[in-house]
Length: 117
Image (tube, rainbow, N blue to C red; front, side, top):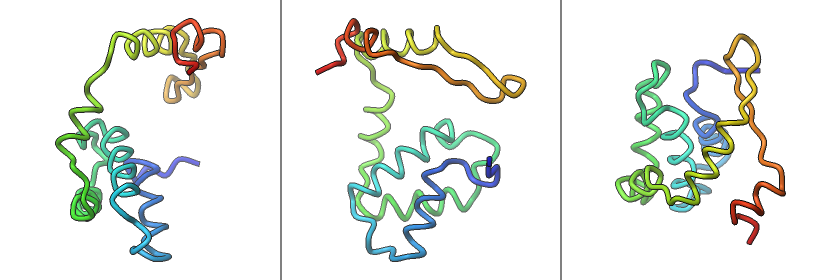
C-alpha cells in the first residue's frame, strides 16, 4: 500500500516511534530518520512534502542531527559509488506505468565493483 500523504517511510517510522515513546529517538536514530525523509522527499522539494514533514525534520534536528554535514555527505559520491549507481540505474525495471522502479545488484557485480568487503 502506498500512503501518499507522507513524503517517506521514515516519516511514518518517526510517528510510530514517537507515539510509543518519543524519548526512544536519540541522535543516531534521528539522523537516520532525517536522512530518509530528506532523500525520499528530493531534499524536501516534492509536492507531498507537508508542513508536518518540516515540523518533524525540526524535531529531529533538535535531537542533534547535524543536517548540513549529513546533506553534504549524502550529496557526495566517490568514483566507486558512482559506478555502483550506474550499474543500478542501467538495470532498472519499471512497473505500474513507470511509477515504481526496481533494480538489483547481483553479488558478482558487488564483488566486481569492490563493495564485498
